[in-house]
Length: 124
Image (tube, rainbow, N blue to C red; front, side, top):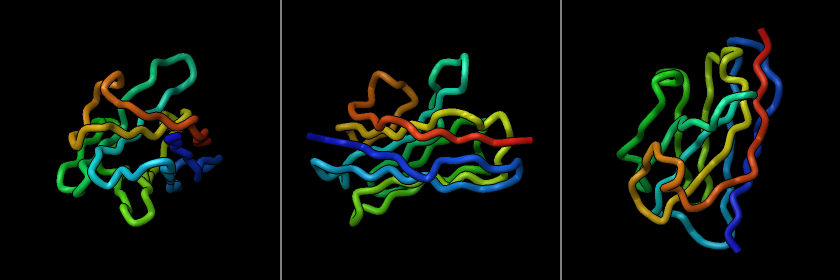
């Protein structure tokens, strides 16, 4: 059974940083795209960042470019999202995702595996 488990969420002041982790179990994702999405209160879930298995191709939502960095550690079967210069608008539940394909996409329905989510709250 494949599982993605997020960790690293919490409460932080504006301008602070957090690093989210997404550990996969049940299969290896070293040849697969990994991604992060988020859902703020009262809003639809949205794409945040995606990465190809070799890390060459990365994509970010415009709202997080220059502040967030996605990465992976294939030896640990884990994806990360380093979030710097956090603002209150980043408050959301963050979900990690994985695809059977090597190419990340912003289309939610194209991702095959999802974590349960971790809460990130940024105070002003």
